[in-house]
Amino acid sequence: MKYDVIIIGGGAAGLGAALYSARYNLKTLIIAKEFGGTGNIAHKVDNWIGEPGISGMDLMNKFIKHLDEYKVPKIEEEVTKISKMSDGSFSVKADKTYHGKTIIYALGMKHRELGIPGEKEFAGKGVHYCYTCDGPIYAKKTIAVIGGGDAAGLGSLFLSEYGKQVYTLVRKTFMRAEPITQDQMKANKKIKIMFENEAIEFYGEKTLQGIKLKNGRKLEVDAAFIEIGHIPLNNLAKGVKVKINSHGFIPVDNTQKTNIKGFCAAGDITTRHTLKQFITSAAEGSVAAETIWSYLKNNKW
Amino acid sequence: MADKKVTIYTTNICPWCIKAKEFFKENKISYKEKNVQEEPKLANELLEKSGQMGVPVIVVGDSVIIGFNKERIKKALKL
Picture 1 (cartoon, helix red, strand yellow):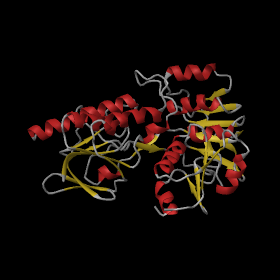
Picture 2 (cartoon, one colour):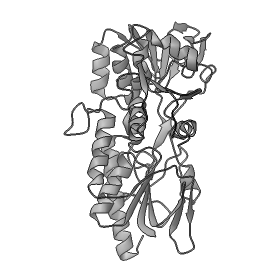
Picture 3 (cartoon, chains in turn orange, yellow):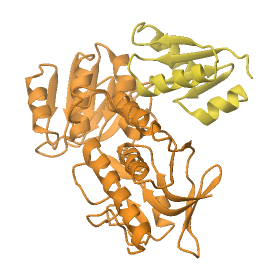
Picture 4 (cartoon, one colour):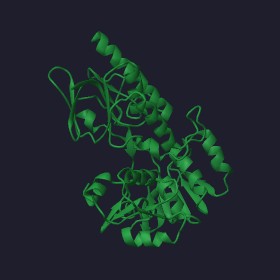
């Protein structure tokens, strides 16, 4: 069986694409290792219009439930290879192999690591990457958050509900987090934002005891949550010669087309929006679906 | 189907803990939940058992699985 479109990735972009593909009557398959993707981790999403304060997991479950009304097959497998066939279609290898006339690539990003000494040694022993998971374990403890973006800001606010003190270590002289988040941080007595502070090493014994900073100081903490952004998951796209920019993102035009015929990309993985959010990802997914529909109808890329 | 004893170390809203519990429920496998957030003294037990201060940690028989690693869980359960 050959699908009109195979959507790879089960986050906001992939699910958004699948909904629109189904509504355009395209024979659609969506494959993801984990439906909901990184969206599942957000403890609170206050910028998806119409759902104030919803958790990332609840929002993703709503997406999935909505999609299920259209009976689009959802395959929970990890894609290991995409190949272009001689007729221009694609084969997608996961546990089984699937065939599609076109692809919407919506794999998003994975958590970026700091890459400093002690990070691996203390991973899960004080150094953490999921504050909604592991934050509550550090009740009444001293916690650091490393990063200056939205996730670092929201993470600091979340962790201040549990820890006795939260230090937000920001490498630059400013934060990139939404201004409303920064205002909430400044008003929070438990949070101290430390600008121009760069972590260079984690130290401890059995568990983390502190962070060495570039300015020579040491910061004693029980836990450090790393929120320094994400790395685009572009490997599978490289396999079919999709152009990737120097930062690892996939350049697309304003219809989500890549340089490869029949291959759209959507969501955090693309260059289209610097604002990486549920709403921009879902929007890109829907645009990609319309592009694929139009391409299959007119055979014009 | 396995009859191995399953314990899941969790915190209240940890997304992967919720996913892990859903997985066991879907497969009709009973488990004991140990919530480290509600009972902070469990943190030491968690650290001793897994070397971890993170959740979820899933113990299936003698296997200690860090994170919601579905493949390892299935293997441990022989599903």
